[in-house]
Image 1 (cartoon, rainbow, N blue to C red):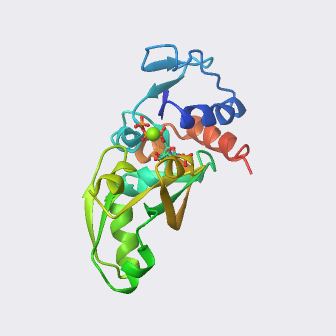
Image 2: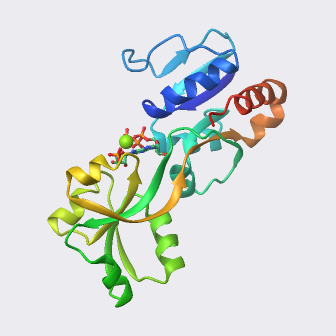
Length: 212
Ligand code: PRT
Ligand code: MG
């Protein structure tokens, strides 16, 4: 049995064509079914639905043989115990710094002020500001980072941006786009040895159908 961990939403949707190229069709729709384990047309392949941030953990400890996770999630997780053979080029977005439209970020950086930054991505933010030599106080949030500058909780946020609509709707401006994000295939290292043939076939099929 091969178990693939996916999160609902964009990663599930964008992985379907890659699975199809590997001859795998998922038999249930996660948006209408309440099942957490989905069967496929291949009796020895199943999909488990987990939170996006839990995908690396499932694969690391063998709860799944392989999975698909964003570069953001993989950096925050640390990647221990994971083989990362492919950038799938799906679920693309960027990691950015955004501020309220009346906050002068460039001046704050130039003057060496301490900047309060709210984010779910504390590891990525810590590395980014350390590389720039900017002093920040990081505030960890689990949701709706856009609210932080509007309420005075923080001066800036570090968050994912794709269309920019969420920032615009909240009168925030993107002042730095510092990392390009896409999702990667991650594989459990022990499974790669024990289930070498079927996993290799799946990795090769994914590799040959990565979107441009
Ligand atoms: O949503 P939920 O809390 O269940 O979980 P999640 O946010 O961890 O999962 P999901 O499915 O939303 O994201 C999974 C992965 O998709 C992330 O880890 C990213 O690698 C990738 N991805 C691609 C995105 C986006 N695009 C994206 N736009 N993840 C989140 N967003 C959010 C962003 O955080 C912001 O709130 O969408 C909003 C901005 O979108 P725009 O289009 O308004 O700019
Ligand atoms: Mg989300």
